[in-house]
Amino acid sequence: MILTIKSKAKTEFIDITSDVQQLINNAGITDGLCLLFVPHTTAAITINESADPSVKADILSVLNKIVPWDANYRHLEGNSSAHVKSTIVGVSELIAVENRRLLLGTWQGIFFCEFDGPRTRKVHVRFLRDVPFGCA
Ligand code: ZN
Image 1: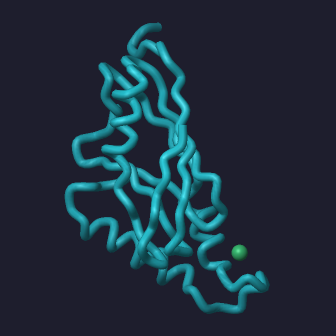
Image 2 (image 1 turned 90 degrees about the horizontal axis):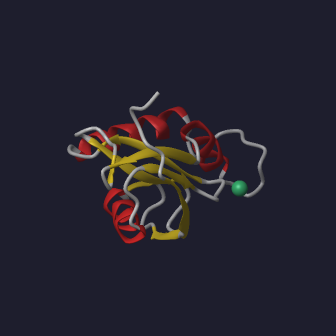
């Protein structure tokens, strides 16, 4: 399965939690694992607080400070900042599914991280079904 995402800004966190949960609902997954993989070198995926939007703004602000767009990069395409951010944040997440729900904490959401937008992006989604939790 593929989630298609259209980013609207150069750098942006897009909450995809409800989209992923919808795929779980459609696939009829009760217990298992959900793998999310971003097949891009200038984007990433992460899990963090989704209740207060200032958290994602703070994370983006820090990333933009520690990896500025303009620096003495060698990569001629001119988007090394986005490549570095992708590597720092990472391109995959593995999340448990229990009782048909993503096993996220109360305040957690899944964010697609755009670092060189706006673009049309993909997130590959795979399920490992019937993985019971809590048994030895
Ligand atoms: Zn590049």
